[in-house]
Image 1 (cartoon, rainbow, N blue to C red):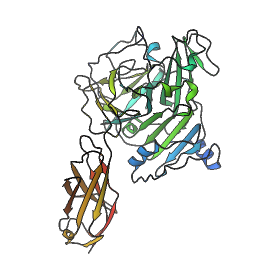
Image 2: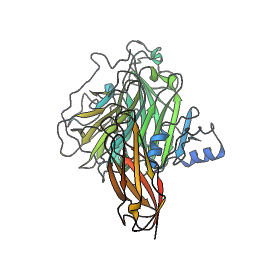
Image 3: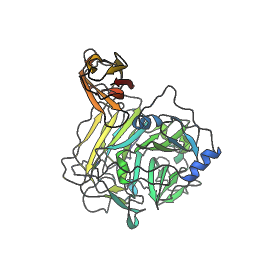
Length: 477
């Protein structure tokens, strides 16, 4: 049975707070150290993973969602770039030895000041079944977001010194606790991490045996009565900036008898990942709760975001149930940020069970979180009556759209046209009837030249939106 910390250990806190966080999306960092590129080009390491079958991606956003579903060929470090849905072997690095300590060993007993996020105070997503994958992202990030923090909770504050953490719950009965002084008292814990260290970024996994209270296993480090160790790390020679939070995705996965994985991708079309055996602590057999967020850069430290910052932490889950996760008032990491939890708007249809939690250091309301069950997927198609029209006679062009889904399809489809250069033009908005609809172009709607038309379905309460494939239209003079 999966367990959170027992009586006397658990800290389930009722949150009534405020939080504003400055996370905006500009200047995307390039992923992957030169050493990784050299290793891949020389053929070092395992072969590249096969590309995802029958996957076609048209945009970097679609690629970013798809690459997290592509398996790696084995244990180690890998990188990927848009538009290829394929991982390539990369050189691994050694992760910093810093402990990202569990809340039971944090400063929570002596911490003063406002109840900011982290150090047990957070919203986590809990499922009735097991989690096999979780993806953390941020939305509604403040455009001019900045951040400073100490490294390993010491020294001066440095720009963009923070961690991203997808944390599991603490759980008992892990085989890794067998050598502890009292296996019934030992708790295992796993973190999927991005960390900043002296001008570089590291992506890796950190493992904990809490209350091991005995000589730590080989290659594990001692921390009070606990033990911890790291997987290999993938190094980013250009670390993340606070503005990158607007497009970053950190994905964690666990497979019983296989590998656990952490991958980080950016909207710029770069991704890096690390895999290691699930047998480290046998996470796949126990994982049912996930905490996600931006926190201090190790050692129980704090991430200090600039004033007027707001962001919404979003956790999407792959589980053996399509039900919405439970939002539990509980966190697991000892690191913090200077944001407080605030009211979170309701979520729309989501492609997987999802939790969202808004945070700010500006004006806030009563703390809340939002959850959503897995909605049905949809597929949108667009048909043109002709592949070319004459300028001034675009009304001869008739557009037809169809949206299919396992659920009843309602809502609207917006058709836009994009020129070879310049801004897109909205052509029409179609209200669906029985999943279909049509429109006729207005005269002089488009200038002469070549255009790419796309139909975008906005979704419905139980149906996720989708985009059609592009269709070419030439407007003759």
